[in-house]
Length: 453
Ligand code: PLP
Image (tube, rainbow, N blue to C red; front, side, top):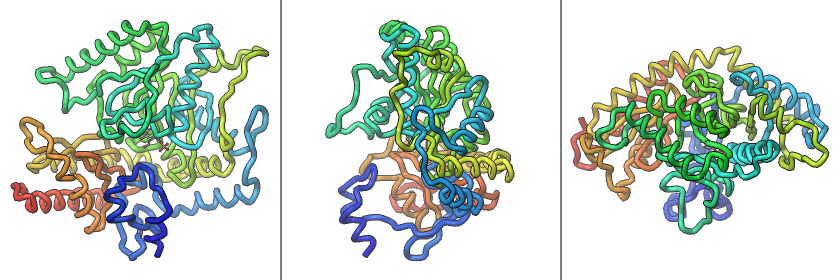
């Protein structure tokens, strides 16, 4: 009955109506730790971590208590203009403490998508307040995903996302090549590829005029665009270029922050850069409630916070700094600290990464890549040429279906299966993920009449 109600009434995000019409939904009913249970009572290890968000695992009492306590005390208070609440204030200060360098001011919203809208609008406002209103262009990269609002989907650019049936903003948004070493132009070493990408950025700046560009937007590791880890030195080069041209660097850490690759924030701890603005969401509350934060520098605040009777930061949402969401985020951060989950993400994540790499010996696997708890497997028809399998084969979905039958959820996206388990998994659970996925790849290979090993 539930299946039918869902089928009849719920328009799912990113739905493909052809397959949804036939199969409907898998209904989930319970979760505990790293495991989730469907309406038939089947239990899965959640290798997706919800949607890269359930970092501390399901059913954590500390988060449930924080949520109920705060809802009982004060379930809502608006934060417009000059009103605030205790959890939002405490969380803003905590994020200022955890974020790198001078990033010490925070605007809250409710999703990664609303955070990118906030960051881009903040960049426009900042430049305008500095007397550079013409700085309106935004430069992003191919294979990026920055959400699904009109602005977010237009800033991002993954091949499958652009359908002719929707509209996209294009007059002020531009896309550079993805820093995708596995599919870099033939004949370039990784360091030459970094040079190539930096030159491409400089050429785009010259074309648009540096004085017309507001911001460069980048996920430190591109997530749903293919878990693309950039070549060495790339992010530092891009940072140096943005600084030299007065362009704001917006790091979209919606996936990479809060432990996914073993740090609070990846920009500085993993890649050695301090952006002007960092967006985070997902792991900020471990997905218990919707919340995002746009954390920005003291230098930006100095400009936008300067008193001017005619200037008004005319942006914000009803649920900015929602007290219950912020209370959950504070409890989530406390739990990550208390249970040393960043250490676990590093220790188990290093093991997971190394073991997954073993799957590169399978004929269908072109590359295993990523970092710690943010990994993917890319399937190819031919390892040498890296030729892709036909889309009609639906390879990643076939393999994820076998995993699902064997009690493991992985996320099929294009020619990849993505893995982003909760940070609490043990070495044995990491091994289960690798072994189950490896067996599924072999089983599907055999079904295709291809060599399994
Ligand atoms: N930015 C990145 C890097 C993401 O991966 C996502 C979602 O996966 C978003 C933004 C959008 O977040 P939301 O779905 O919460 O709007």
